[in-house]
Length: 637
Image (cartoon, rainbow, N blue to C red; front, side, top):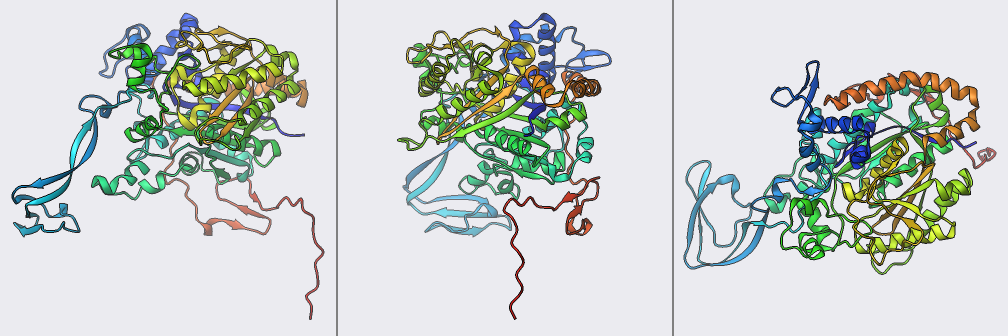
């Protein structure tokens, strides 16, 4: 019998807040929550944003001054500095984006200037004359005539809307980070958040298993392209900056997995990253659930971390017409100027729209096989029976949508119907749309949804599109959707699409249901949909914790479930203690640089096993051979 992959932990960060405890989800349905949950959410976000912190003496601000009610006092600031908003990066504000402009000048007479010797070009331009002034300074004379130069410039940003992490939150400040790209700092925080919120002690899990029964699959869609990664490396020569020894290795797309293995989990098991544009999270999730279903691994950490809000990446997406730039937003609403409120409405899935909004996010989930989860008393948040992936076939444009998504969603719907029944599929499932807010997406994805609904006899299929709140975090987008779906299971609410003034005329919506406000809904399953550039289509199926428990009862029996619930009480207490600390602004990311480092001579190596110091179980070297054995032949004389 195949193992069922269950979700026993989730953690991360996106523009709506922290993933653990459903904080980010609650930010997207804030007004529909009971008063005490609204207060808790606002207080937790204020602490995350370093506006307030809680101690034995109650709440106080960064200067130590008491705050009677952070939820009331700081509410407007929290709401205005989370989700999509005007880009707060100083480079996108006054004076414009730093740039250089090439100029061809004619000097009417020679020009003489001084500069430091180390700033001289290695290859002097023709005609330059250099005289020593002292050991460090030289005088340069440039002859009259034609002269090429790069003149410093400041370009007005063409795109000012962005979905940044909540203002004031800096994951790199929470641990001993040294020149880490932002995406990797987010990954360290998110994986630590996932472990803490699970209520499980990682060392306990690790010691129960063969070391290579643990796996990590994590990456992103385009690597680390900020200045600490490949972004700084690639522009170092033309910008006059020096490349560092860290930029090259830390830029790789699989580096989130590498960081988790080396500094967070200490795992020696399977590892890797599957890059599939906007479907990258689901690609990595597929690797994890395949390992668990087949029994290759019993515990898998899956995730992504994307930090693409840089001038260069935004300009690249703008140049291809994918982003909601300022000019398009003005034209869309016939405005002369854009206000902060206009930027907050930049992303409009399935409405009249003009492009997506760039976002940053990191999401991680901890998967286990169902038997181990019951044994450990893990708190099961849901289960993921499968992820389906299909390409588009021949295409006119590599970035245009194609036919693969019909196959992925069709297979996913068929699986749910087979597992839960036709009535459950029709009445107790919902769609987490990729919902980018581009005109092409609103037409093509809605047609996929509408046609699969028609084929399965589904009417009024609820559609959720959370990019209206948190923008498009590239490879992490489906991770944002998955943890939001887990929030819907926990709270019985589907987020609305508040920027949907009206469904666009070219959206196929006969079988679909859209809402601008949160909707109460009891769901058995959700479909996590992704449509990535290049034809990277994926649809994941996530089952609710209630349905998962019914499946586990069927698979293991009532006595095993009763015993699991008893063991789960202590795990839930641990998780609650972590969440209380986090909501009060106390974080301690797990980062173990240089600890318990091992070399080959320290291993105990046998033909059938390798013992690793610090692990109770050895790594088995016995191979699974499904191909049969050949009889040994004698060596001819």
